Amino acid sequence: MTVLALSRFDPDRCQCNSCGAIVHEIDLLTAPHPFDHDNVIRGCPRCKNCDPFDRVCDVAGCLNVSSSGNPFPDGTYRWLCWTHSRSTVGDSAGPQGCAQGESA
Image (cartoon, rainbow, N blue to C red; front, side, top):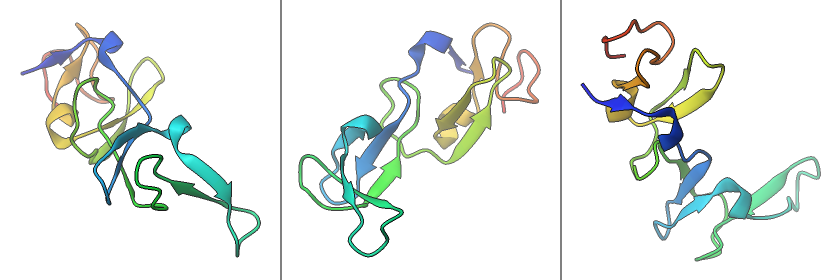
């Protein structure tokens, strides 16, 4: 079983489905939506395509697409790939509902 340190998270990353770029959400291009004025469109800063993004696992260094969101006992909510969703975090805290030493 893999144990993840809480400091090893790199949240809010997306992968462009068009060019494969991994981009932090804050670095995505944004513009007012031309048809829905209450919304915005997002674009990839590398290829300029709009809204073709998958959420990437929050574990630093992992480039897998996230498969689920998981609340943690420290109050954070993390998006994890299938592999990391089955890991524990820190010495005693894992995804909510997991006891020490159990995988999710």
